[in-house]
Amino acid sequence: TVGARVLPGDPGEFQFVPPLLGIAHPTGYPLYCLLGWAWSRLPLGSPLGVPVADVAYRMNLFSAVAAALAAGVTCLAALALLRLALPALAPWPRRLVAILAAAILAVTPTLWSQAVIAEVYGLNTLLVATLFYLLLRWGEEGRLRHLLLAAMCFGLGLAHHSTTLLLAPAALAYAWLSRPGRGEAALLLRAGLQEHASRGLRLAHLPLLAIVGLAPLLLYAYIPLRAPHTPYLRQPLDAGRELVLYENSLPALLDFVTGGPFGGSVDLSVHLGERLSMALGFLRGELGWIGLGLALVGLVRLAIPGGVPGRWRLLALTVLAFLALLAFNLVYTIGDIYVLFIPVYLVVTLWLAV
Image (cartoon, rainbow, N blue to C red; front, side):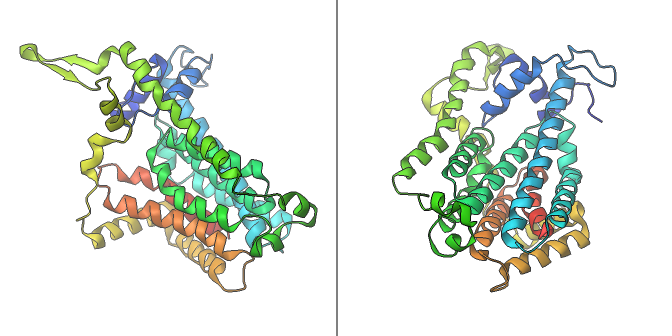
């Protein structure tokens, strides 16, 4: 149940920062703060009888809506993946499988836990799912607009959660392998799209894609603009001392948005066996052995030579994303690392659908 009480820790911070147009802890989460501010202004009542003015409830509800939308977009991504990987599958079974895969992701314990409190991970999952969907649509039809929207979604992801950067190798590899008129991608396009796709991706489009992808980073200007209006960034201590949470200068901004205070949490000397065991435990706890077994079957199905049209690009998208996210989580030693596995579960859910 989406509750209304003020929560401890980061969820409590995300209940009060966006409605005030304040600044959250590094990396600042400017997209979340701006969307949360707009959301907090909506006159939303509660079936639980919570007053409309209760922004704590409204910010919790923001996570619930974002996570629900993430499940819906995951369904669309699974549909697109199944159309590419299993083109002979009839439409109705394909839709049922995609709905089931999205429902499985929706009720994974970690995503559910983050969907009922004010947190950034529901929105992050929505952005990751949308990025996958738009890339798969580019692979289906070769329309440049899908790639431009994917670039914009990637930029918005960077303006929200910096782990989006980990998806760059997978996205670039898939986009390149799926460019129309080249190799197997040309064979997979429907006949009606061949003429349009023949005009597909050109080198001249790359600057436009870069601009569209990087433009959302301007949202980080929110931090220096709002810093003078965020009084809690300076907290008086005893003996005339002062705790400065953010100093409004360019070096401090760069350190803030790159997560400088958390840099010490990246530990390349971790015991790899223990961390892998931790990751396997997380996966089993979220999807069960049956879910993991089905996901493994789906991955093998994608990898069988000749079994799936365009298998290399589908493997590039899903396997590179999985490995990049997993590798980072193995060496990032924050206490609540389990929440950063939600995009990993999304990828595994797509394999499970196959």
